[in-house]
Length: 354
Image (cartoon, rainbow, N blue to C red; front, side, top):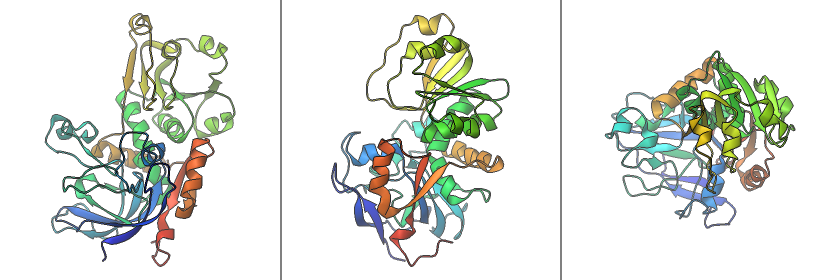
């Protein structure tokens, strides 16, 4: 089994992704080698390869929404065997010793976790992601894909799914709770599905009504356009939890006014610009402004099991790897319903898809 595998990589900032080869590390005692079947395209991939989030370590092979099949395991691996259906999300390592890691919240590792791509691993090598034939990952950072989930619709769950599941669980989305989801994109569409499956009453808040039919079909009971100023008056104090999935600046005072007493506005997007608010928007109704990123490995597995139990997968458009640059432009134009997933078979036409 060769350690040299085909991939698609960005070789410099602003350059299109092109065919490339990478060298995988040898499978160590605690490692799992995965033959990648599908890799979701996250907006983070685009920011990273275009050097918009700090220095990129070129060449960059993006992709942190990975599903595939175990091809080899190390001698000390106990949780997986060759042929198992598995997934890898945004993290591939952490210290394992700090308070966050001990709690199973590796995403908040106090000593710095290792991202799936464009990061420096403990071995000093630059990590490379899922736009490739294979990947080698420490067993602890591999999740099992339940049999009830197809690998293509499961791939975006490793980022978009857990990014929305974690705050919905953290702030108690469930029966009797009124949840609003801001934005209906790759993150927002999963937030609607998950909140509805948890038993909450779900409303979509989108700039326009053009995706209204989609939002209602996904499980929302109401859909409002935020470009209409009347929306904020009509919905004042209406929600227990608002999950903001967009990466554009918001009028925080306006959105906080939609919360009931003790309501929470939780953000999972990352606007580049600072946002301001008036203290009274929090003080007078004991409201909370919060943020959240992905989830730990334990919660990610919980989310996958929840999705399988409720028949939830991402809404995907499957593309060939040679279409990735076109897909990036379409993501930037919001021209996808709702997540692109790369079928990596094009990297190796001779490989069985299993």
